[in-house]
Image (spheres, rainbow, N blue to C red):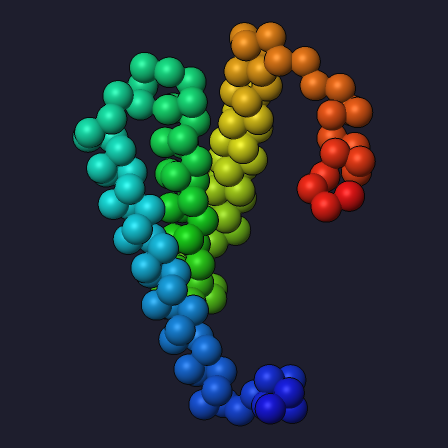
Amino acid sequence: MINDLLNPTIEGLEIYDTILLLLGFGCVVTTALFALSYGLFYRWRKNSAGRSTMYLVASLFFMFGLGVLARGVSPVYPGKSLLTTVVFVAVLVTLFRLLITLWMHFVDRGVKVTPNEFSDDTLPGR
């Protein structure tokens, strides 16, 4: 069994590629439906957390879309390098924005976290 995983046959690789393509397509459809539902039925523009959530879901959509393009269309398609760079930069900016939003939430609430609060002594079962 392990040998089959380490040295797959051509048929095994084709099945694996098909499974990954279907999973990626499912992720693209799910993130698109979430973004559409969230955009239509929730006032996500009203607060920073809502905007960050929408941007995160949109960046996931584009990341999964890159995978579907690479597996479903062709591993080498026109503009792949530029498109991949743009999507990765957008994801990085989105994650950074999400981090800033989280930190600003802590500051607004006056949360003070000290290192002792998260020491190993406070974990359950210790």
